[in-house]
Structure formats: C-alpha cells, structure tokens
Length: 82
Image (cartoon, rainbow, N blue to C red):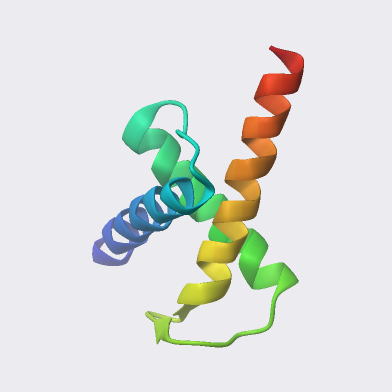
C-alpha cells in the first residue's frame, strides 16, 4: 500500500514538472498530472536507457523526458482535434 502511494505521488510530481517544462497545462488538474507522470515514466523507461539519479527503482531524468513528450503530444492532439 505504501509503495502505491509513493508511486502516485511520484506520478503527480513528474506530471507537474513535465507540464511546467513543456509550458502546457495538463487537463484534469492533479489527476491529469498523476496520469501523465505515470504514463510518461513508463514511456521514458521503455524508450531511453537508465541514466541520471534513480529513486525507488525509477530513473528520474528518463521519466521526466517521457512525461514531457506525452504532455506535448496530448496538447498537440487536443488542439488539432478540438
């Protein structure tokens, strides 16, 4: 249970950082941040090698890069199809 809580907190932090770096607002507030952070961390972990600091088995820099890519892609898709 404690691990799941930290995972959600980490997802929110990564999502917020990604939105700030990308200069985009993530829809649905904190829930959107958590979802973007979790999915972005997964994308970054699959596409990039492990480098930089690692916290709780999660590479921080690839997680943030993956989340930034996700936020930019979702923002572009929402603007294009809205």
